[in-house]
Structure formats: structure tokens, C-alpha cells
Length: 332
Image (cartoon, rainbow, N blue to C red):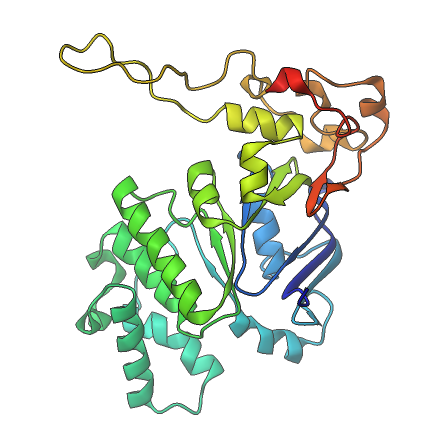
């Protein structure tokens, strides 16, 4: 197997004595898409920002192509920044309202490719604008003149103009209409295929994650609780939290009452009796033991005293559960 492009080891992020990300370990390979899922407050965005050194990590290492982004010399870390880019959740807020979009897209080129002439830089900006589905003459406009979907295309163009090795998408489609989401997802897939870049895709939309990802990381209160291939995880989740998360996917209610319309499959917004019906506890209260134990119907006394390690239970499958060796059939 080829060496991992990104290696994250024992990464921990703290805020005022509270641990937001706890001892996270995973690898990401070139041209691979890894999905990161979990409830709001799980620490997904915090993890993403720590990887890019936008937040200070309390402990651990993040190596990109062998360079530790957290501890390496400043010059080496700066040189790697062109290989690690991010697309943010709010497309308009991520753009400078006083900067023309052509200047915003060209700024990374100005920093990392200073040898380019102004004309060459403009040509690259025009090319990437057209590649993301916009026209070259839009470079002279300001962000407020674009729709949300167009602003996200601009954000993607700004991230992709340097042809990074790794693109982090932090809820990159969650604020867009469903039809626009599909267009942006297809654009990301096309760019990934053309440039061979890896993606860390953070989303609440499990259907999108399933469609995009080769592997999926499931995070709960700052800890990874399950890691598996997308096909394996969605077909047979093992951790009780993963199973509850998938059970909580919204379903369309039956439409039998509408005249002339066939009934649809029954469902509800939240599976009855799902542990996710209860609010998650504060991470600071779960310093010891399994973080999910108070919401888990299968918790043992051991779960309160011992933190289950993330262990491999199959080829490429890791689970942090004291009962991962059991089938847990009642959860299916």
C-alpha cells in the first residue's frame, strides 16, 4: 500500500480546559475521499481547523507528505500550505466583500507563485473560473453580485487554483439548495479526478457522504468511534452510535391521504426509541469511560470506568466499543 498523504496521530484540541477533540488518529491517501460525520458539536469542524493549523492543537501530530504541520519549522509548514486548502460552509462569508473575485482567486497565486506575471496570473484565474462553471469576465465582480451557489464555486476555484494535494470541505454544500448541492458535488468529483487530490468531506448529509466517500470516520464528542469503508459502514454499522445515527436519517411520511397519489414508504424524522432522541452530554463530563454510555441502551458498568480504544475488528474496520465483538442484533 502506498504511504499515506496525511497522517494524524493523537490529535487533541482543548478550549479553556475542555477537550473538543480527543486523541484522534487516522490516515488519508492520495485521491481518496474520507467522509467525517457526527452530530453538531461532535468536533468535526474543530478537527478540520486543527489540521490546517487554523486552531492550536494541545497535543499530537499532523503530517502532510512527511512534514509535521504542527511542529515543523515555519518555512516548511508555509511551503505545505499550498497543498492543503479548505472550502468553508458559508460561501459568502468566506469571501472578502471588498475584494473582486478575480483578486481573491489570484491571491494564492501571488503568494505561492510570485514568479508569474500579472497576465499569466489573470489567465490562470480565468481558466479556473471557467472550470468551475463561471465565466472569465466575472473576475471583475464583487461577492455580493453572486448567488450562494456561485460564491461556493468561487471558493472552490480559490482553493483549487493551486492544485492542492488535499482539499478539506467543511459542510461545503449544507447551505445550498438541493439542486445546487448536486452540481457542487459533481464539480468536486470532477476536480478530484482531474487533479488527483484527496478530500476530507465533513457533512451532516449521510446520503452525500455515502455517495462521495471511500471511507467514513464517525465522530462523537471529539472521539472517533467507528472507521470503515463507506459500503461496509452503511451496510452493517457496528457501534451503537453509528447505528443510531443512521436510524435517525429523515424519512418521508406516507402520502396516502392525498387523492390520486400512491402511498410512499412509511418513516419518521427520528427512529422511535433512538438514543439520539436525547441531547448529547457535555464533553467535559465524559473525561472517563465511553462518551456515548449515557445514551446507549447496551452500556455495561465497564463503559463508565474504561474508555474503549479504537481497535481493528476487521480489514480496515475500527470500532471503539467494549461490545464490538458482539453482533448487537437488537440494534438492527
